[in-house]
Length: 395
Image (cartoon, rainbow, N blue to C red; front, side, top):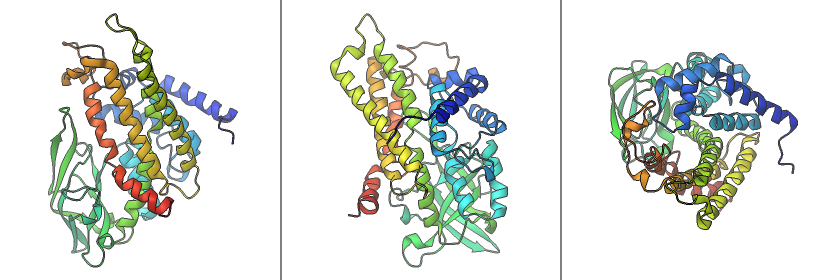
């Protein structure tokens, strides 16, 4: 098996690298490279630049405005974007709800929703988890009752990432209590500006506002916003999670972070020897580098499967989240005690106030705490191991 990139693939990589050099704005590059606070306008601007160039959706087929790139080209593109300091595109629209609309939506829904996702004009968030319904998602209670040709939605969603920015939310809602819990769930698209929708922030350990609670109080939703068939939402949700878990491998981002970690480990700090000369640290970093290379190859195997992401995506989710957590743990260790002094204001571009330690220490603590979530969202790693045992190993 030849694991080397072909001449055509290397030429494609060179084209992507040149595009990023020519089109990625310097202020965006600086913000991402320094791991500063994400900015909505920055993400929208970058998505428009990509969309105008025809590169807005690397994973989409050309018939919907995508690039039609092969899985290897997609991986090269994402890796080069991460290495160049480009912001991550919004997965909720591009990688999650869009494939569901393409596969199970009708033509009217495709024409209505896909263009806004492609240009970045419409921000999406995910309405899955509820208080008491996380890993056991089939126990969700948010209801949608059909009245006068439309649905009336009542309930609550939680851990809603970037819900404060979202224009739309794709929701799993209960439309029937008959039979098994999974059989009474539907997939509904809800306008976040609808009367009765309330978004309340959840402030995290690092003081940041990334997640939210979303409440639905007699929210009216047109019946046309139902994806596919009523009570078939569980099928669509599993399809979506396969795409989400594949994306959670984050190979490009972790390779970029690995590169920065090696740079930090080679630096002398306060007259002390570089951390890379510490045998135990170097061994841990080498082991992590090997695991990351293995993850890259496994990702290619899953992406080149003609049937699309299947239960094997759970392997990517587990290893991707574990590698990411380990990288941020080592980076915080590399910055030492300076990482303890977390200064939220220093996460803004252009901050010139007091600072403890290097710029690498500024986001280290917040990143470490934030990345503890990796092993939970997209389906906890414990659930992923059950899926692998049952659907891959046949146990």
